[in-house]
Amino acid sequence: MLKIYNTLTRQKEIFSPIQANKVRMYVCGMTVYDYCHLGHARVMVVFDLVSRWFRASDYEVTYVRNITDVDDKIIQRANENKETIGALTQRFIDAMDEDANKLGVIRPDIEPRATTHIGAMIEMIGKLIEKGHAYLAENGDVFYSVRSFNGYGKLSGKSLDDLRAGERVDVDTYKKDPMDFVLWKSVKPNEPNWDSPWGPGRPGWHIECSAMSGQHLGAHFDIHGGGQDLQFPHHENEIAQSEATHSCQMANYWMHNGFVRVDDEKMSKSLGNFFTIRTVLEQYDAEIVRFFILRAHYRSPLNYSNQHLDDAKAALTRLYTALRGIEITEQKVDWSHPQALRFKEALDDDFNTPEAMAVLFDLANEVNKDKSASAARLLKSLGAVLGLLERDADAFVQGEIGDDGLDIEALIKARIQAKQAKNFAEADRIRAELTNAGIVLEDTPQGTTWRKA
Figure 1 (cartoon, one colour):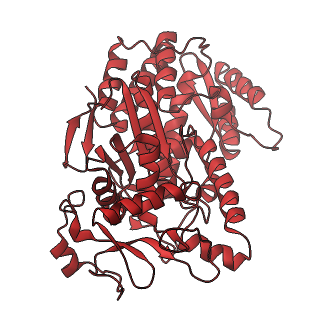
Figure 2 (cartoon, rainbow, N blue to C red; figure 1 turned 30 degrees about the vertical axis):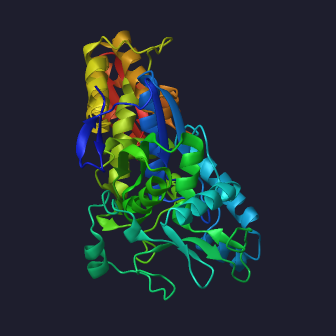
């Protein structure tokens, strides 16, 4: 049985869908005012894997990941660039899609944009006011009354009294309580705005996801996911808004992936260790980056460094090397195979990708021993479930050799002939020449293969 660690209950639980064999999942997506960074890459890849595994497990999946295309940062950046927010956000949506495609991320089934759901947000805010959970302030803003919702803090484990004592809260003289948060912002100069019963303005950030998830998945759905940084206050506020509006539980399971760190420090622009996806992809193949992300359990911190990416490159190359020279025509997984069962048990245990990866390496060892076509076929098929090993093995391992003028195959043949003639000095010289050119030779019982270092 598939188990998920539920942030809401702080324990692993057997997944039981609301509707048999159907999964409705909402994941908080990107705010599109800049290029996506490594934290975004992790969200994309992690929940792509979750969606892939549900589909491989014969569930019918509706995966929604939103796009925030209006907020303070977007407006500020558009004004700085002297362009419309539409032009700015579309440019970075296109860039996001390019990055996701390179990382092997399958597009979500639905990608709602905040600006196309303003009506749903206004309707939800109106219901919250009617039910006494929100109020119109003197400055024209509409605020959510946090103390009107008894369950506030159940996701994060924070109490309102502790929050007031220990958390930094925005000071706003128009709020009835410092913990209240904005649902609707009254119009300001040089800002986009929409008409509403409370005057022209725009929505607050938190209400966007409550409205979009409700519109596309219903008031009550299976899984809500996102980065750990969103657990509080964003997801806590979503629960307060949605459950106060609909008088039912919002999501049965809450999933949060861990932070991305850089050389064991938090990634941030202020520390100068902030990396966009495309910056990383200038140095590393996109499949290596995907492999690196999935090699860690999704709830664990992910520590980015060149050393870790180099290790991921070497590890992925080992898997591809095992597949070289073996013709694989069929890629259907035989789930009765002991290694396939072990792989399934790993992913059914809260998407345990490190253990699933261990299965791939055990299969690669089997292939290396006797060039077993069945083991190679299973290796490639299980890799595909993770979005890996779907390229030509020779092309991946060899890579682009460059214009050094070396005839690698001829040199390998000459080395073999030198060894047969017991001219080991010449054989060693040829290996050294290839090594200096960035070519790694691997001698196996089946012959000598090569790859780019």
